[in-house]
Length: 217
Image (cartoon, rainbow, N blue to C red; front, side, top):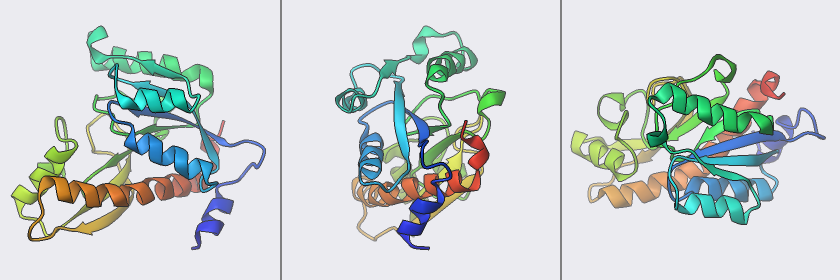
């Protein structure tokens, strides 16, 4: 499938772009990439709101520079994951969001019925193969790549999956492999995996939107 055809297929309603929310906790590199993809016309969507679990992070500044409303909802302000997740949903609901994208979001979500199947995440390892050692609570960023190297894998990669109540455990949507080189460090492996993520996440989003037109409100 050519990229142009993939772009056309997600345009089930030319007058109405898919409305996306992005959840993040840090630098906003994935948000920045998605904004570029949208600007180039490679994804028929718009990011209408950004939620961060942390204040003072670069991701918030990227959103605000792009004119996107950004809200900080820290986990410490809520007694449990369920109430924190409810606050996030409450913040998102006025924007009539079709799909929520996790982009380096480091907090557990409890998925409410209305949002089941409407949230995607990208994880920098191959799932479900790596669940036992490179996925789950506390495993993010270079920690994931360190775990892959410690396990002795010769292949790693990235996986886009549907978000469920458990960390990194939802059904995969799309994944891509990245070779592990003999002299790799967590930092060098992370750089190559992120380069793949920049292509993989937009492609997975396009395919998911094409496969689930009913999610467009």
